[in-house]
Length: 251
Image (tube, rainbow, N blue to C red):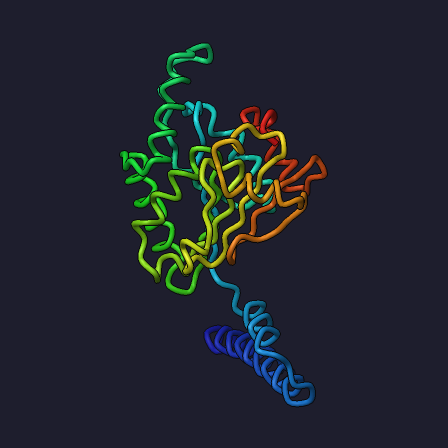
């Protein structure tokens, strides 16, 4: 008798769930029939019903020892609604906060990256991104954030990714030592490059300098990608990023 009662209880629960799903499907169908919508709106409805899996990753610039990764990771997570963030550590040659020789070595390595030199840091990022893509699956999306030298490492890693991998990655670069453009990498889902007008790295990034000299301060485009140069009026996400001590003088 007890078993029959439990069985009836589960049947009632499943009937409630099925009824709800049918009602939702019928409501959407009626809405689509009564008011024709665009393909974009249809995709928006689909994503609300079946949200794709998304993963947030980031790679750092120069002068980041392992203990320096925690704070910026927390800042990024907060800016994106406290979601988990995985980082790919770009190691520093610095052995302490006052190791200026190590800092110089970091800068020297970054300059060789700009010339196209492949190092283990590039290999590690390729592995990191492919692992993230595997985790989200074929219908998922990876949002990859790169800062300073991390942007030029990402630029080099992008050359090793295939078309299908690029289609599932969005790039957000802050103060990058290289701009990551969809004119160069046309298959990335999206590329956004942020710079501050007082960022010294602008002196070695021609595309960003060209954007600044063109006269815009809050946005613009080079090819299909967006390159944004800020003059102090920053969006919240950028203000949160600026809490990282390595970025305060750059944005």
